[in-house]
Image 1 (cartoon, rainbow, N blue to C red):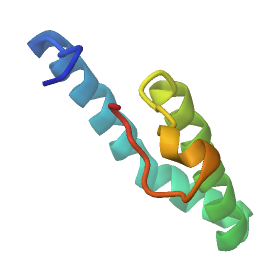
Image 2 (cartoon, rainbow, N blue to C red):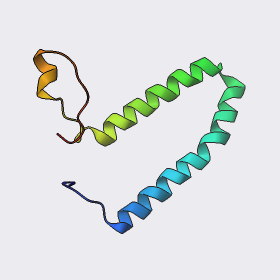
Image 3 (cartoon, helix red, strand yellow):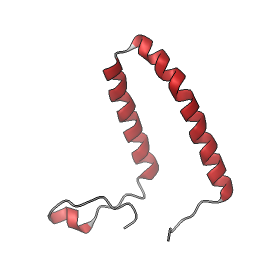
Image 4 (cartoon, one colour):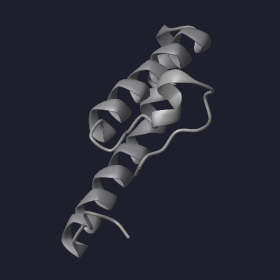
Length: 79
């Protein structure tokens, strides 16, 4: 099972925050495309997502023992 489970209130708050940012995404991308090249915008969206994903999930990411000295297999989030 999970070591840490979120309460119902935390789930609701998380969902509201996620859906709010998702609702803002489309109009902000349309505005940004007026000023920037689509590929330039894509690169910065990917970098932004990667930085925030690492910031949010840094404590859950564990490097498997097999990665340190041998073949790379797969990522293990809850090892």
